[in-house]
Image (cartoon, rainbow, N blue to C red; front, side, top):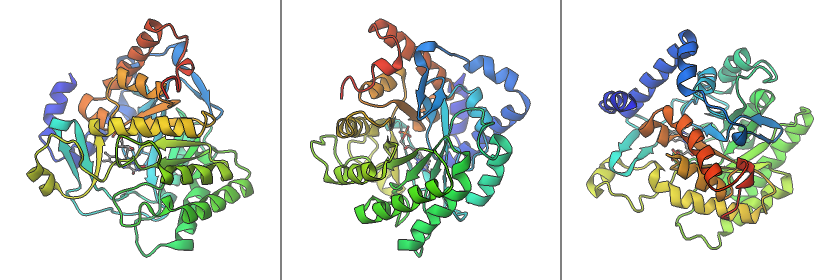
Length: 370
Ligand SMILES: Cc1cc2nc3c(=O)[nH]c(=O)nc-3n(C[C@H](O)[C@H](O)[C@H](O)COP(=O)(O)O)c2cc1C
C-alpha cells in the first residue's frame, strides 16, 4: 500500500510531499482515528519500559524535525509510537533557510536537508500544546519529548543565546515528558555553538537552575552530532560533553543528529554537488550512529538512558541499536522510505527477535553489544 503512496509522494518536491503527508495525517487525526488505529495497533508486554519515570508502551519514537510545530501528537499515538519528540522549537519563530532545502537520495535510502530550524516559535507552540496535553502535560496522548534549539539568528550569541534557550524552556518544559537540547544542528551557522565545552557548561547551568526554580523534575537530554568516522576509539569532544553533562546531572543523550559530510554514498558526485550543503540522514548514518551509541554507553556506564537514532529502517536495525546501548530508538528517514507501517513492523519484529534469542524483554538486551 505505502509503495503506491510513496510513488505519488516521491513525484513531488520532498518538502511539499512532507506537508501533504502531514495534511493527510491531520485529517486522519481529526476525522478517522477509529480507522487508523486497527492498522497500526500492536502492543506487547516485552516492549514496555519505564524510563525517566515515563511509562512507555514500546521503545519506538518519532525523531525531532518531523513534527516541528507539534501539530500531530494524537496521530503519533494512533500510528503506534511509544513516544514522540516534537520540535526543534526556538524562542523566536523562524522561516528557516531558503527553499529547496530537502533532497532525497533514493540510491542511498538517505535524505539531505538544510531546513535551518524553521518553526512557529516557543510561544505559539506552547499555546498549541497546552490545548492538547494540558498545562502540565498530564493529558498528553503519549509520552512527549520537546526538542529545543537556539533561534536561527547568528546575532544571538553568548549570554543572549543562553537566554534564548531559557525562554523556550520556561514556556515548554512544564508540558514535556523530557526536554532535548539540540546542540548539534548542522544547518545554521551557529547550530553547534553549544558543543563547545564552556558554552555548554553555561547553558546547562542556566537551564538546570531554571528547572529548579520552576520546581520541575523534567529530564534534560543532549542531542549530539555523529562522529566523523565509524572508527571511534577515543573522541575528546564526546568525553568533554559527557563530563560536563555528568557534572550538571544531564539525564540522557540522543545519538545522533544528521552528518555534514558525504562519506560512503552511492549517489553520484555531480548530484551531491548540485544539492550543496545540508545534514545527511538515513541508512549511511547507521554505522556511525551505532558506534557513537556504544561509546556513549561505555562512557556513561549505562547509568543514563540513551536514545539511538540515525538510519533505523527495520526491526533488525532497532534490535541492534538497543543491544548497542540504546534504551529507546527514534525514526525519521526510515518513515519517509518505509511509511508509517514501519512502526508496527519494528515492534512485531522486536518481539520476534527477543523470543528467538531467549530474552524476556527489551530491557534485558540494552547494551549487550556495547
Ligand atoms: C528534514 C529533517 C529535519 C530535521 N529537523 C530536526 C530538528 O529540527 N531538530 C533535531 O534535533 N533534529 C532534526 N532532524 C534530525 C533527526 O531528528 C534525526 O536525528 C536524523 O535525521 C537521523 O535519523 P534518521 O536517519 O532516522 O533520519 C531532522 C532530520 C530531517 C531529515
